[in-house]
Image 1: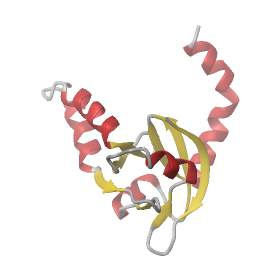
Image 2 (image 1 turned 60 degrees about the vertical axis):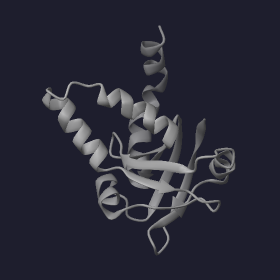
Image 3 (image 1 turned 120 degrees about the vertical axis):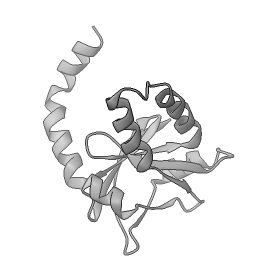
Image 4 (image 1 turned 30 degrees about the horizontal axis):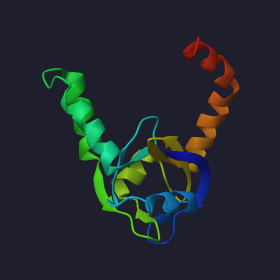
Amino acid sequence: MWYGEYHHTLDGKERFVLPAKFRDKMKSFSNKTFYLTRGLDSCLFLFHSEVWRQFEERLKGLAFTKQQSRSFNRLYFSGAQEMEIGAQGRLTIPGYLKKYAGIERDIVIVGVSDRIEIWAAQQWNTFFEENQPNFEKVSEDLFE
């Protein structure tokens, strides 16, 4: 659904424009609602509302009596922002999410199948440099 790596810069209003390929795909959605929240590995996750609802149902199924479930759900859902993405594809990242992801100005937008990830450029570069050399080994381990 979402693929590719795109480098952007936040403007003076803390906004960025989604890549043209993503905006083109969004035109086919009747529902323009997305959810932005804390992701894993210090990035942000952006989900279309349909995917968000599916994942939300899975998380609601976790036992609230388990401390890990409560902690994850609190951090994940408290960080979420519902947003409508218009034809221009502009998004504003709230300050607390910028802080969480270490975003200052330069970002990398990564399509990861069912979600879009937003990274501070330096964080992405570090992740890529550390993980790219092991790409083939990881594929062997995952897909034996």
